[in-house]
Figure 1: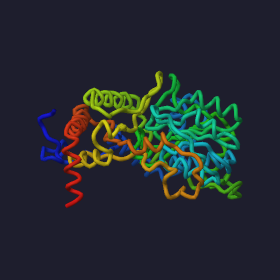
Figure 2: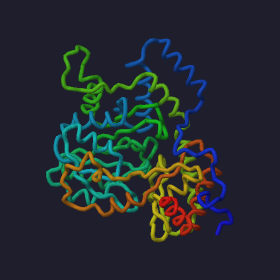
Figure 3: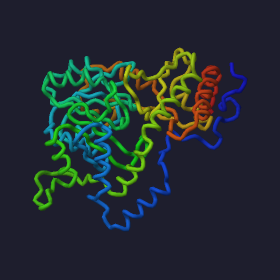
Figure 4: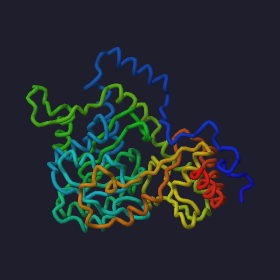
Length: 396
């Protein structure tokens, strides 16, 4: 047992000043500042060269012809479903961020909840197949930046003759079988919000091999207005600004190196916490690369000795922030309580009760990440006393 007690039991906090869950990493801020100043001085804040350059750079790295920059990932998903005419059942996981389902609902569609694989945490193709009757589309999420089983899902979608949309919010820079995420399915939609590995402040990217779909999304991001103000359909104001595109361009610099560093940090965490009972991690398929947008622990309370709520409280005493990504899963959220839940989702419910995401940023040091892991080890080694202390605190 570690000679140092957890902070909750009177030991020194691992991070007295606090360690937040995430911080965006933006290379060469002085150079970015100069470029932002140039954009402001140009007077061209939308529909300009920075957005086009961003689309071209992402198209090149994803080996795809069509990239459309949008205001955010959710808007991108909404525009894709609108362009595809999806207004019926969409087979999708419940273990994902709520925006995956919100976009379906906004398009007039209805989520049909499928299970995720208990090891990879991504959509289970076999379970998705059982819901395929009458489905208009399949939606799958590259959870925490780990690619789905894209091959199996593409075969399923092709066999059904329905579009396959990947919520790739976490996955810019991921790859599956050596191929970059961005070129799979009917469309993939990335996020560039502040919690991602590549950031724009706010922003999103739609990638697709379908030229017609790309044109519809491009038109839809600008109200459906082809330039004549005679709108062809009810689109959105979902343009990415030149300022956001400029930040995104800076953030693309060094992206692959940051992803490699995040993978190294995760490996260091696992090494430090090796042997902790009741602790496991998302499995990455052989030949795939995850961005590790998140470092998520899967905690089995019986073996670990604490629930994820108790672990989160103990980590907070250490100054370490954490989140339950994703709890509650979407099928348990108030926004979707009206949908009939005619089949259980035991894998999803079990995972949602056992996941806890701990800090991981691209400019964290290996020492800091190992310190977080050390804190988890100390807390588990003192699990019974930690649990008793938390119960006593609740009763006071």
